[in-house]
Image (cartoon, rainbow, N blue to C red; front, side):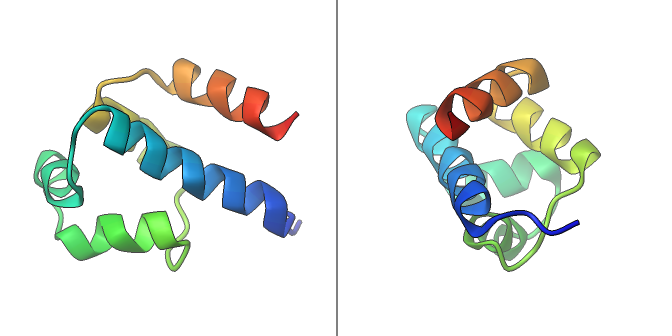
Length: 78
């Protein structure tokens, strides 16, 4: 199944927005995830796709729940 370009763009925008709202840099998130900053950059640019467990870890790294993330994503997609 292929995700629409618009939905993917909304998802990526939300990843960046949440990180920025929390006052975090990519390097801060990467440190929390114990990965290189380039991995976070690739997530946010869409160069690398995230699975559900990675989204969950990313949410924890920025201080929100997966449920909060999904609710916000659903609002943005409407």
